[in-house]
View 1 (tube, protein in one colour):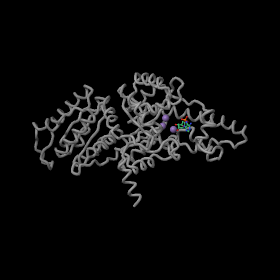
View 2 (cartoon, protein in one colour):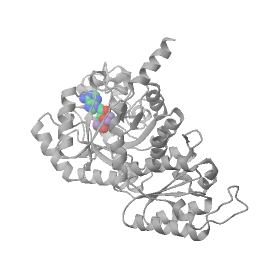
View 3 (spheres, rainbow, N blue to C red):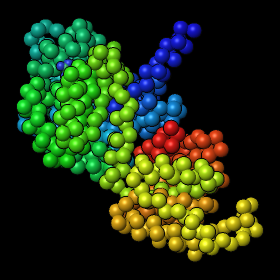
View 4 (tube, rainbow, N blue to C red):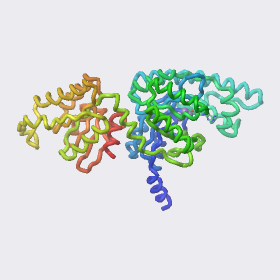
Length: 447
Ligand code: AMP
Ligand code: MN
Ligand code: MN
Ligand code: MN
C-alpha cells in the first residue's frame, strides 16, 4: 500500500533526466536496470550518455519500449580544450550505428586501456611506498565493460580496503596521480556528433571553471564551433546557477538541457531523476530538442492504412515535429480512382498515382525539406518505392502505419512505427528500439 502511494507520487513528479551513466562506461547498473528505475520513478524520458560508448543504447531503448519511458540515445565525449579538465560534450539522438562515431569511440576506448594500466602502475608505486596492498589490474578490467575509467580503479581500491570510499580514492590517488586520457578537439567532437545525426550540448559548464568571464568566453568559442545546447540543470547547480546558465544559453540561441549525471554507486555523483534540492528537470525541454533533431535533416515520412480522421491528427503532429511539408497522397489519388476487386475497400492506388506522389515528395526533399506523405493504401511495394526515393534524396525514411498496412513494415524494417488508430495508441514495432528516428516518432505519437 505504501509502495503504491510512493509510486503515484513519483508519477506526479514527472520530469526528465538527460545525463545518465550505465555499466557500459563508469556507471554501476546495466542499461536496462537504469531505464527500469527511471520508469518506476515516473520520469517521462531518460537519456543514456555513457562516456565514449554507445553500446548500451540498444538495450536501454528496448527497455524503454518495454517500460513505456522514452529513452534518448546519447553519448558523453571528453574534449581537449585550453587545459581545462572537464570540457565534456553530450551528443543527443546520435545514431549508434554511425561508423564515423563508432570509429572515434573505439579509438577513445583503446587509448583508455594503456592509460589505465599506466595509472595503476603509478598508484601501485605509491601504495608500495605506503606499505599498502597493490591493485591487480585484472580486477579493474573485470569490473569495467569496455570503458576503463578511474571510478573502476576507485571501486577496486575501496573494495580492497585501501581507501574508505571512492571519493577518497580520487582525492588521495586518482586526482594527484592522474594521467591524461586521449580526448577529441572541440570541433572534432561536435562534428562526430553531428555526423551521427546528433545534437551537440555542453555538459556541466559549472565544472569547467568557476570564473564566469571565462565561461562566457568558452561558450562563445564553442557556439561559433557549432555547439547547439547547454546543460543548465545539473546535480550541483542551485536554482540561481540554473537561471544564470539559462540566460547565457538563451542569449546564444542554445537549447536547454539538464540531467543528474547519475552513475549508481549510492548516488555519490548524482541522484537519478533529481537535481540540486531534489528538483526535477522540466520535461518541456524535450520538444525543442526533438525539433532541433529534425532541423538539419531531411525525413520522408509515409503514413498509410489509417482511417482519414486519425490520419489527419497523425500527419499534423508529424509535420509540426519534423517541420515537414505535407503532401497529400490521398488528394492526388482522388482523381484517379480505380476499382480493385481484390481490395476490400474497392479502391486501389494505381501505379500512375504512386508515381505522382513519389515525384512530389522528391521535389520537396530535393529542396532540403522533410516531407510527410499520406498514402491511403500503403502496401509493401509503395513502401519500397518511397524508401528508394528517400535514399536517392539522402533522406531518412520512416513509416507510420495503421494495422491494415502493417505488412509494409516487412519492406522497411528499421524505421517503422505501427499505430493503432482505433485505440489511438502506437504499438512498438520490433525495429523501434533499434532506430533513433522510429523510436523518437513512436514516443512522440504515443503521447
Ligand atoms: P576518467 O574518464 O577515467 O578520467 O574518469 C572520470 C570520471 O571519474 C568522471 O566521469 C566521474 O565519473 C569520476 N570523477 C572524476 N573526478 C572525480 C572526483 N574528484 N571524485 C569522484 N569521482 C570523480
Ligand atoms: Mn563518469
Ligand atoms: Mn562529465
Ligand atoms: Mn557524465
